[in-house]
Amino acid sequence: MSGAILILSGPSGAGKSTIIQRAEKAIGDFYFSISTTTRAPRPGERQGVDYYFTDRASFEREIAAGEFLEYARVHDHYYGTSLKPVKEALEEGKLVLFDIDVQGHRLAREKMGDRITSAFITPPSLAELERRLRSRATDDDETIRRRLRNAREEIEALEEYDYLIVNDDLERATEEFIALARTARLKPGRREAAAFRERWLGGGTES
Ligand code: 5GP
Image 1 (cartoon, rainbow, N blue to C red):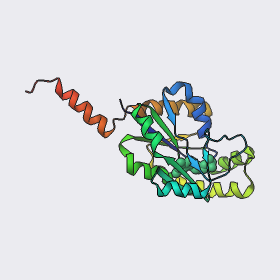
Image 2: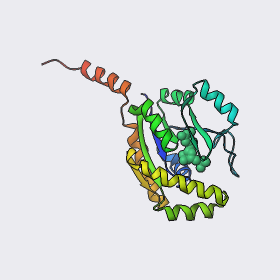
Image 3: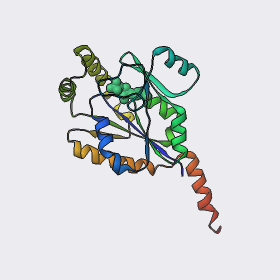
Image 4: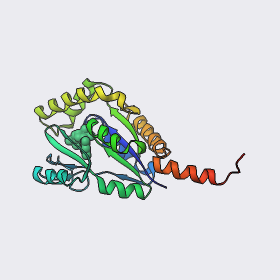
């Protein structure tokens, strides 16, 4: 059994991490890909849990060493997914969850498209996103504006995703996400399809 990848994108404030937390028990054996970033931790965020927080020089060294499956600059900071733990989790047959932006989704698709199912998660409107970001009160005005600008750009990539989850009701959005996690596991990657076909053909009698 080889694993599968489920990529979630969507604006900061869409509720991705809340949905993942709520779904945790229902989705079985999974590995959440912890990204590396050069942005500062928000209150409550922990090193090695929410992100690997690092500085720009170290991040650029890792880029040069080819250690990222994908990376992007978002809101003036680097964000990236290290390849090694993802490969290990896939080999263990796990579902690997990514919370990455639209650029990262594109790059990951180029490299591992046959293993990937993706969903764009968003609040029902830009106005609602703004309301949520302001009530979260973790970011200053300039940061919120930057996130909103970014969200306007990101929504343009909606059609590149397999699925859309509108998070206007957390309960329902979580249910939809759980359904997707189950579906993602059913996607046969190239290698898995070939191995299955061989086994499948092996048992028959030619007519
Ligand atoms: P935040 O600063 O709110 O945690 O994340 C900002 C944006 O960066 C979000 O859209 C998030 O999906 C994206 N992001 C987080 N980790 C990665 C990553 O490893 N790669 C890419 N490409 N984007 C990421």
